[in-house]
Length: 92
Image 1 (cartoon, rainbow, N blue to C red):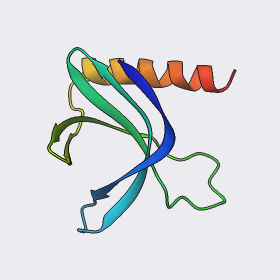
Image 2 (tube, one colour):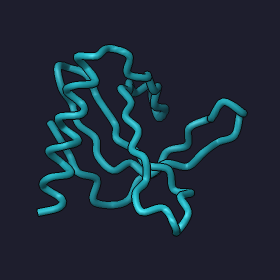
Image 3 (cartoon, rainbow, N blue to C red):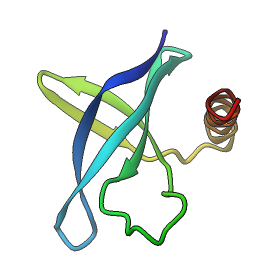
Image 4 (cartoon, rainbow, N blue to C red):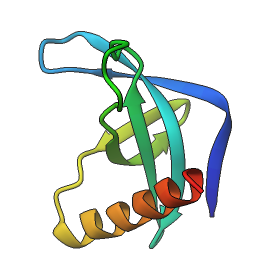
């Protein structure tokens, strides 16, 4: 399953300083029975041409999302391939 988010959806992620940062979900997909999110921060300045994209594996617990950082190189490679495909299709 893969799904491009048509209506903008947002999540808040707490940073290292304890501040909630708003991110826009740009893509979510499933691979190998795991769920993933690609997100960008919403507070980028106008002089930045591109926002940094962050990837997380997640699980749902009721209405909450539990986010996990990606630490496995094989998993990173798969996410990078999905992102590059998405980027290519978007820029065609």
